[in-house]
Image (cartoon, rainbow, N blue to C red; front, top):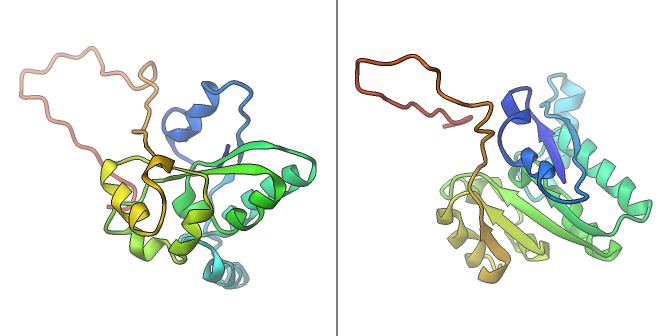
Length: 182
């Protein structure tokens, strides 16, 4: 499994936790960074032009390089890009030639996918696509991905870590959920 990880609660929630439940799974990860210096921004811009996703970062390139190195060392099996909308750039072009099945999970909202996915015809190179909302599926099907290759899997949460406190409330309980970009 591949993932760039923000410095947040990613260790306690989200798709990176799948590695704890899949036998023989290994997480190849790197810290997500956008690169603030001019050479870094220029390199990111150049790399993202031909990558599947417009959200591609230098940390994504480092992650794909780690995966490529593993494939050169003889890795065979399933390679799962956990944050494909930001980290999938070029693996779809080399994984099939290496005998690796490529799986990708997309998190972007359905109305954002057309601007995030720069080269939608390349989605057909992905062996399995996981979506976190059923509303995302239409986008992939409309770009030639067979429906049977799309799986809905909602986000997981470590309920042992994220538990309500013991404090009792005398008011109506309200929940506020905040996303990362909306």
